[in-house]
Image (cartoon, rainbow over all chains, first blue to last red):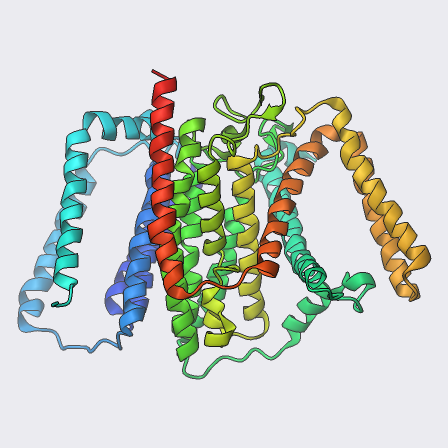
Length: 168
Length: 401
């Protein structure tokens, strides 16, 4: 199938372009929008992998909730244009080679990995990705980690509230 | 012909998309006419009257006016986001409508469902995902104008939409528990759907067991679409016109259309989730096709009567003759093709009731204050939606041990 391949490469390109723009943009809002672009492109990639529920949740939670809050805070604080710094010496001589090393490593493992089948069959949902199977797994099999995570998030919210509260 | 038989999905989808776009755009235009007429009646005025008979060509004139006005871009605006914002708002609003099925999903043409542009299994979540992105249009418009009033309007609007989206999403979970599916078509007519009757005469619509959920949804939906009494983002006494103050010409019209498209989407969703979608309140008998036929014939007769008595200009008489023709064609379609005409008829009738409710609220209610808006959303609506969810879940567990 040629169409899923075209969609895959278009979305991959979009995701990479968005990620690069996120770092290069001067305005914080532009950075946030580039991140939204990455999220949406990733969601379409999930769709290609046959996980429509995860794709919709990716858009709903990351692009529709978290990034909206980011944009909201940036607007509220009226953050100005970022200042550019020159390359630091550590970044130049250690960071760049390490980054290339990581890229090479990922490319190596991808090259030697088993070819996937989900993209080839055009995005038909495998049974494990259906909403029912997913929720059964979360609320039966992994109920304890799920509840533990939500309590952890609650503690984080309370901590943020305490820190943000003005002195009485 | 051969191309059609080889690519039925492509051809039928494209036709459906074009048709939906045409219908929705026309509906958007005439919703403004409807709103102005109804509000005018509530305030003892005539409303649009001179452009076309009873102002029927007013939407067309407005559209032409928006197209030919000067498109002013503030020199200090952030140009990319300034242009992106109205496109984002309109495109997302129209995309959401494509997910709505307006009739049974098993009525086929060339092997493709007729009544839904795309009926996906996770329809409801996808719909919420797309509408949740709509905040960006408003927020970016406010920010990129580089002006104080739009920024305040955009901030208020984002805060309001984020706050009420929580209640909006929570209020429909009760319906999901009853239906047991996320597919919008199955929520209406699936195994857990809304077909059949209680006590042989009350339709099994979700609005009866989910009355609290419905009112939470209705309130949150009005707030989500920034309409009266929740239209703080564009409170003209405080903020000029809110987030779209600096927008002119067709970019302003795009925000306008996006707002009306969002109204249509939330009304469609309310119809599907709580009022049985395209299901008839009488059970879908053969004789029901005479209801729309009678309504359209009565409307045509009234228009004919108007041509004879009220209207004086010859052009207005001509326009009303065309309207009579449209009503007659609609009556004929309902009479000869009831299997294709009846589901959309009930669906559109129910949406029209919600649209009237929107306009009614606008003609009646004063605007909330900002602190009232926030405390109402977080302290009343959210707990009510949560309580509704808990009660529904407990009752469901008791009834399905």
